Length: 154
Image 1: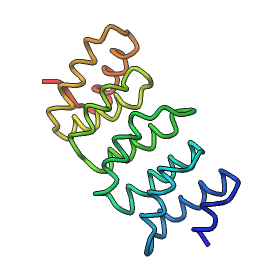
Image 2: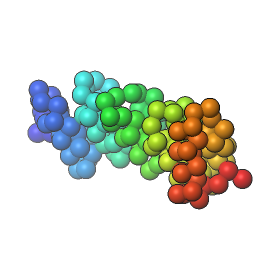
Image 3: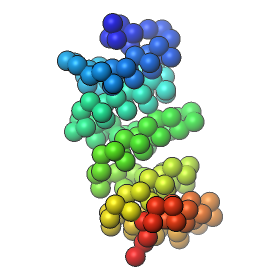
Image 4: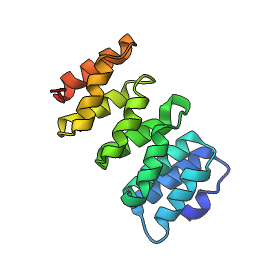
């Protein structure tokens, strides 16, 4: 039934179906989530698919998370899903993409603060670079992330 709902004409139905798929799992669930991530035209459905894929098959999700971090979408739906997934699956390879998108919205700096607070030297170095960024809002977001998470740059 969920597989059929993933082909529905309504983006909201597809989003709900892939969200449910991520929650219940089962045979073939990760493959269906991966397909929805790659092919669905809806940003919200793709974001839900990325979240489901990260939950169902964390190893295979790394590539999708990295791609999601660099995929702009309406209201940053895809990037935000990728940021949440990156925080749930610590991987130093996500630090670079998070730093690259740190000027577009505040969440990447917050994520870097969380990762730095966990002791990741790369995230600490990225925050230090953001503190020296030419854009004042990026510097402010980095300061706030460090203060909030205690992920100092020492």
